[in-house]
Amino acid sequence: MHIDMWSDLVCPWCFIGKRQLEIALEQFEHRDQVTVTHRAYQLNPSAEFTTTPTTQMLADKYGVSLEQAKEMQSNVVQAAVSVGLNYQLDRTLSGNTRDGHRLVLWAQALDHDRGLELL
Image (cartoon, rainbow, N blue to C red; front, side, top):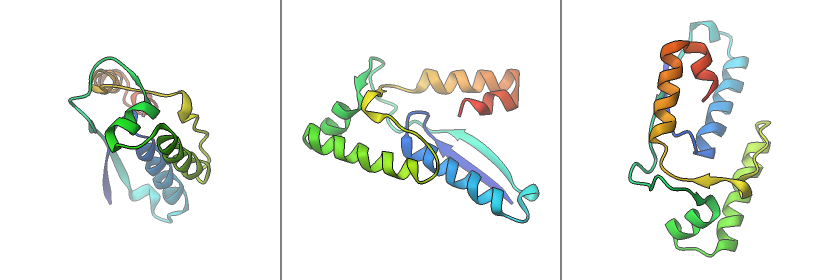
């Protein structure tokens, strides 16, 4: 079985999904017959190359208050905890991820397994 996994480096849900897949594969009897290809996907390719606090970005994007955006982030943090991740989203910044994806591809070209560790 082959799985193509598309994700953006700054998407907390993408990393939660990656962790859920890892957990499922650990329990899957035929995991040695599964290959996973990680693929780059920019959620917002038109994002500015300057950074913005993620809470503010969410408030602007969804037309909600900062408090509502913080609540949205709290829901993500709770989902992350359920798969063993420790998110501190109140300190994150958002911006264009193109250069980050380029860096991962470059690292994979040098050493595939080490490049995957960046994801």
